[in-house]
Image 1: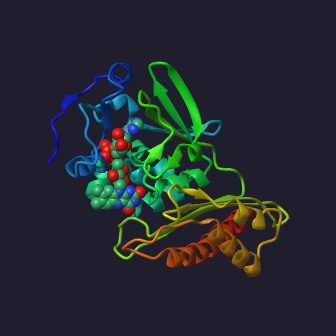
Image 2: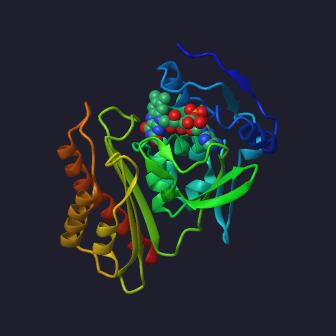
Length: 292
Ligand SMILES: Cc1cc2nc3c(=O)[nH]c(=O)nc-3n(C[C@H](O)[C@H](O)[C@H](O)COP(=O)(O)OP(=O)(O)OC[C@H]3O[C@@H](n4cnc5c(N)ncnc54)[C@H](O)[C@@H]3O)c2cc1C
């Protein structure tokens, strides 16, 4: 049963920020409600005020320019991202991720900011956006701040958002020359949440060496995990199968997964190893292809 609450529907971002500031002790933002309503129904979230951002059309946009890169407004839906020609052209990995994220019904209503702010370590978007070096714009009536997305996550379902802050925008830098990205999640039911997921970006240089790499794990710890040791195995080297195996082992060592009804921690370690090898290989092959 959902506990009683007062429903507030701001007409503008400024109004939403003022509502949050006035009621920060006992309010919760709702957008698509795809995650929040489940928790409210279970009694895990109880709040006096629900502030609904869904109608804020000023926060529904996808823009791109070569200097600043991609900007995604908070209330943009998954489906809008999936169907964006702009995103398909510049960041095809985001379209790949969206196609396998939940069902079309959830993607039609669920939003990008809702997905990221929910802080679920099994989410698909956060690891992929972190691998793409994304930042997030957090706003309150006190002003705005930009945070690297990887710094948003502080614990299981916990984020660095203050009680009077909301996510206003997600920012992704322009694609680096020679860089390619890949994401794959392992799940048993198509479009279900990841048992484990791995995102990788690899940048090749003209000599055929790996200039940069970012590897980020989903559902392999309480938050998305940047596998920095695995990245270091690759950077500055000409990649081969031996290095991919070493990177997979390093990533597995950086994972700290839980056991649950879906998989044991041991199996998740194994998945991290295999998927890291696979995603780095896929991104590397594409990066080399792009470079030639
Ligand atoms: C059946 C099902 C399957 C799913 N499968 C997947 C999957 O495979 N992969 C995956 O990644 N996700 C999956 N999800 C999660 C889904 O992507 C999210 O539920 C959805 O994106 C959340 O967006 P929302 O707008 O509905 O957020 P809401 O449910 O409205 O909010 C979620 C949380 O974010 C906060 N919030 C929302 N907007 C903001 C904002 N602008 N600023 C600050 N805080 C905000 C809310 O307060 C709440 O804590 C699944 C969900 C369901 C129901």
